[in-house]
Image 1 (cartoon, helix red, strand yellow):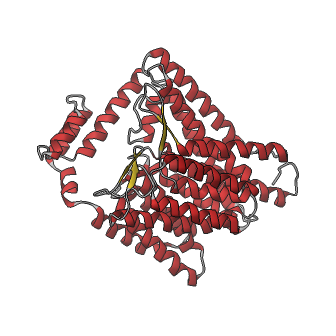
Image 2 (cartoon, one colour; image 1 turned 45 degrees about the vertical axis):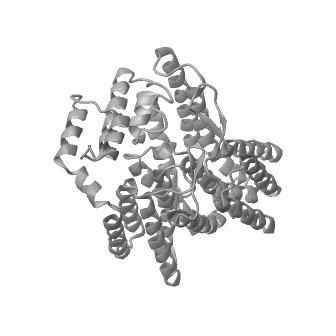
Image 3 (cartoon, rainbow, N blue to C red; image 1 turned 90 degrees about the vertical axis):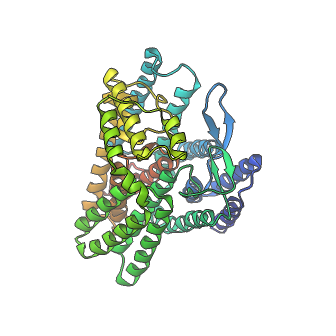
Length: 468
């Protein structure tokens, strides 16, 4: 643990300083991971720290494309390979059940949709679609990394470290707000930013999604901790809502009330719901820019959205952004942009309903994860993704309802369930499951859940065959 604390301190210091020497970042990152190899639990926590805190720094520009390979890709590839070495050395068994089978099916369908897109001409033959597919494999691989590296103590360590990670992410966001430090955006370091804060993420929406994940842990503390600790968790949740306000993201205002309501129903502690909803309402009043809110409800916005949805009008987004800067546009552009992209993506899905148009057809975002999956992977990919979420939620509910399980494991299962629901609701407005840092962090946590589930099921049932 002293080694982990020392290298964590070094890493955080380097992060806040925001050195622009990319080669130095590479050496520091790889050293950070290699030093953690002495113990599996050190590597797990190192990844838990590394994923949200290390900025997205472009390292290699793929020739002929706008796609880049980032420093984090090399570090995570190294961690994935080392995890496989550990599994082979210890002759461990990965047992995740039906969820794992559907996960493999989802990957196979994604591969078929990729080749279908190339043959259809809906994606260009080149590096880009294959790199998008490999990035999805990279996301999901963290599930197995979390499984291999975790043990009986992992849930307790995660509960401690997510709080520490939040304070670091929050500190960086506040320093950005005060214009003391800048941000890495699209591989470039920007000395100062205006408006919405990013922290160590590449977009305000991704920053907000991450804070909403950590908010779930705090709500669990409010509903499960002793009375003395509930005040601490309540203050932490309030601070998280303030930090969330720095992102000015609206998607989480749909998802967090759902999460809080479900927590209260499941835990049968509805007395806290009014307080938390008041906090959310106050946050919405503070965050929602008045002009933007009224623009969203303006007749101009409503009319143009109707025209786009009916196919009677198209919008040149880049030209409209420029007009907005000059004050020549009086409608809410982000809503219009979303409707434009959704309409285009859904039209392409209708043309290629079975396997879709293939990865990378819509670039980095569609701002609706479900329309994106339908358009890129077709109805087969959408059904596989739905089953993936279904089996994960089913396993979480099964563990939570098993009173023979330790409370720590049951509560962790509930946290994972509510994180999935939170991201599922937010995915109506953002590509939550396709955001790299969110996906890495999520599947790492899910891997720990399945390992803990298996460890304690072995203890309860007294069976053998699953290596802990």
